[in-house]
Length: 74
Image (tube, rainbow, N blue to C red; front, side, top):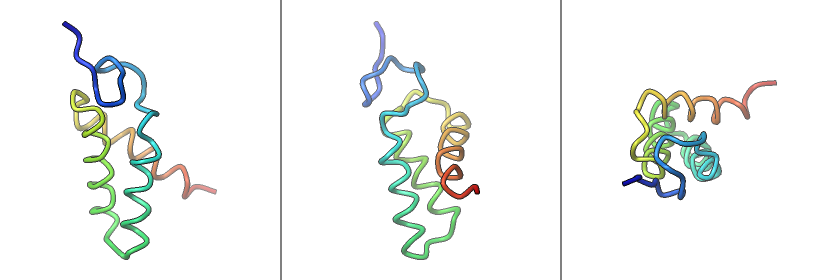
């Protein structure tokens, strides 16, 4: 029996782009309120893992890190 994440994809499939807006929004909104970067990042990872509960945390951290840093690079 295949397990599916909340984004409707087979567990471990794809890169999780379906929840990217929610993940980035969680990070940016906390950051805008003056929260430390670490807290913003941890919250964004939690949002990602809610959508993709079978993703290993190190992989989730890599994905979220690339998403939230993408907007800050020039």
